[in-house]
Image (cartoon, rainbow, N blue to C red; front, side):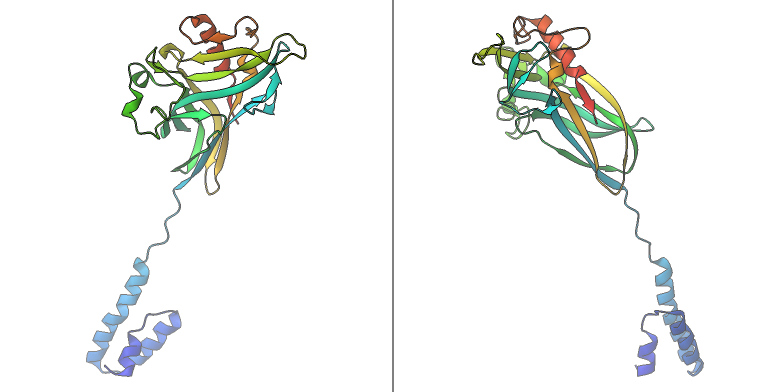
Length: 277
């Protein structure tokens, strides 16, 4: 193959390259023209068949749980003042979140999370890659779904699962054969003096009828940048709303069974104190 023929096989880069090659063809014999015309067609066809880069179809959604007490970040082991003036120290706050979905503007749901245990000693941050577009809010539930709650053996799950022996440590009633949905506990000073904080208080709720579903409308768009949402728990409001106030000097402990009424009151206040920001 001579040098002219080799040059004709090189890829076309500009319209001028194509014009020069046509001129070269006119100087060649008829038979060689046919072969070279065919060869010239391949780069042209290839350039026409090259696909444009496909647009990105997915983006990142981040959900970060946060807890506050009197508008201050909640820190485990720290003391605060409740609505009745009691000094309360929060020694533990854990809760199960389940069946989390991002809800599109057309009403369709994108699954995000099956179940997890949020421990506010070191709350997790969730990151999901989902379809780009407009969304109207987040759907979720607080607690353990009925089919996973009663008569279950935590040993059936791998150790890193939130319902396993390790993952649910302190959140499973062996005597009640079920999971604690929410545990909020600590100690308090009930006298208003400079006495030590010794009086225990504990709200452990976890029956099927206390499983609470939520849909919080919060429009957001998934695009190029990470969309960040905050699931906020106003812990001071776990003790009161406009219609009810829990006085920890009188109603300080419930393990649900044995004090169902207090468990229901706390569970109502707890779920009302959740927002999406």
